[in-house]
Length: 414
Image (cartoon, rainbow, N blue to C red; front, side, top):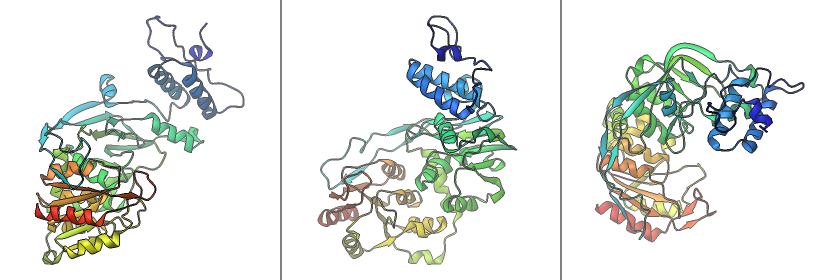
């Protein structure tokens, strides 16, 4: 006997030769005393418990959403590949494949993860995906594995869980061609410069499109000002609001983090900042501190600063400076030291071959900025902290000053 859920979603028995989850009876959701969200929550849980297989569950849940909330989710797409296959998007090459040089990593520590000293990387093409009659609800995004996705179940779940009055949500119609610069972690300085701006600059006719961002951070506004983009050509996508445009485009993220054409485009921002006479007085050796962020801070930073100060380094808190000043500081530097964090993104504006030392908490190594130094063709020095405050990967930590002395000596002799 077919289950009640199978009947509700019109799922045929095995071997019936039909597509699963194609129809939902119009009267299936009618239930006295229950609103659409409550029905959705109940049936969502039931499908997860009863329907076999993740793929079939997904099809059933998509069908359920479309039936209960047709005006909010007209069409749910999971990946760009599916969107192309089903005719919901077109794709055009905006930059051909490229190559990045091999990593060059040095460390006073005896062991580093295998991801360091990786071989030369092949970077595939950059594509622009265009969705005609496009919707945008923080949905054109990169997931945490840097894959391109659209209209995600996660975005929908955020919507219905955080706003119970989902039935009142209607699309905001904007008669513009838009370019989405939305990610799940767009608030990151690294994400903005290393993953988004460069790909935007490769998108044809980007200046003629409405640029959509998740948040209005100062560095985003300052970047648009450098590029001469008027404020009215930037739309900050509101929380839990669905927009519908004439079309929406997005440029994919290649699987390798070191996307050479995108990073090259970002480096060109430096040319937009005129050089002033005062730049000759800026420090040549920088220590980029973490400020009051509260994670990955060096607990014995005073000792570290005493060591670095004796070697000519000056502490800089990047959060205190606008983008144009960050560019000036970076392009004037010969050597940079910093704990692992977004400040290392400013390597993009340094001179090729700049000497760079990155400090990691004990037991935690992450390769984003090694990829940037790979692109910059400079030697990347790594030193591990020796004592974590809480034992978590993003914990504040202590550094061994004698080991730091060895690391700085190695850095300056490079």
